[in-house]
Length: 461
Image (tube, rainbow, N blue to C red; front, side, top):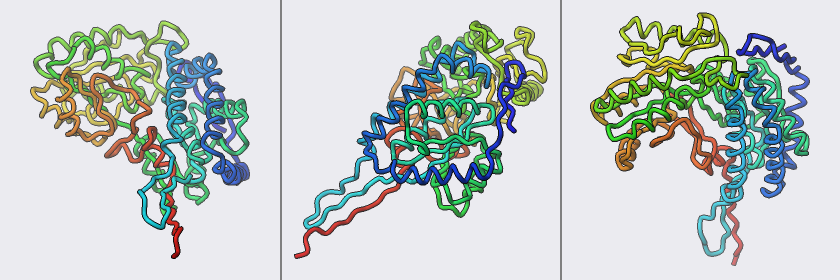
């Protein structure tokens, strides 16, 4: 039995039984059977089914906001954004499928017909996280289906009801049975499925240790494993930046979802010429956040997913201050912030350095450290001094400078004057401990298919 505990008030809001081995075996058999007919549908036919799924999910948006507030603490005022992101990504991937999946023509050759087809892998196993439970799951589910695969979803224990939402949407859309299935699994069962030889790809979003376990489970299976394992994403504020704009947008990128975003801003490097303008303005904005019950419309900062997550960030802050960091936000200003509570006040730290955990280890909470730099070169060195490489943002009015700096950054996405956003037209990918693989964009379809060459001699005389 899995119990889902609401971080909002500590109550049990859902209990579900873990799948039996017989249920798992039946689901895998059903998936393989269904894929044989699904892959033969035209892309247009698959698009019709997938569009109906998206329509069905969007129709449930008024119910989804309160569910997110209860299940993972997202303030209810932001609930619609999750559905909006789901819809944007899904509809874009549906719209480009025909072109992205079209055969590659290597050119004419006398007497031959040649092409490289993009054929589906088979059964794609998605293991989705709780922090953006619709948007992360849709990255692989809809794309996998459009490519001719079928999908099995294992959602995080905190957001099992989100997996049920997917089931409802597929049922409402009338998609044939077996094309999408949701299983409630233990960690051991998940590993067994990956190592069973009965799934053809694994798409995982989560922690680095869990990612290593996924790779170990997939050992000797020769299946692709897509891993998005988090980040410690930096922002660099150049001397020529629009400071008011940078403050507003970097703060949103750092504290949205209580900082529980793999591509959220967790460290900031500010040029010394604008330090005295940026830091006070940033601190003042952060002091205006409202920490409270996520079901309250006034709340802009909800609880972390569980008390231990909040206590980890509290310890990072405590250790940093003990090592000389300056904390700019007083916890008494946020009365709900008490040790052992998932409610954690936002924090801004200066006088930090890379010897501190808060500047090197993923916090996944509402804290950011700010360092002063004197040049682009110093900023680049510090931004690259991380085991992670998901996104990096540059705040400047000089496009050429952004391109030059971006070329030297070890990251999956370079932003200029924005952050914490996935453009579905661009490859969502990372490097270093952030993992490997790619979702979204035309490139994402390459990860969900394999090439198959046709070399046909049509003239024999």
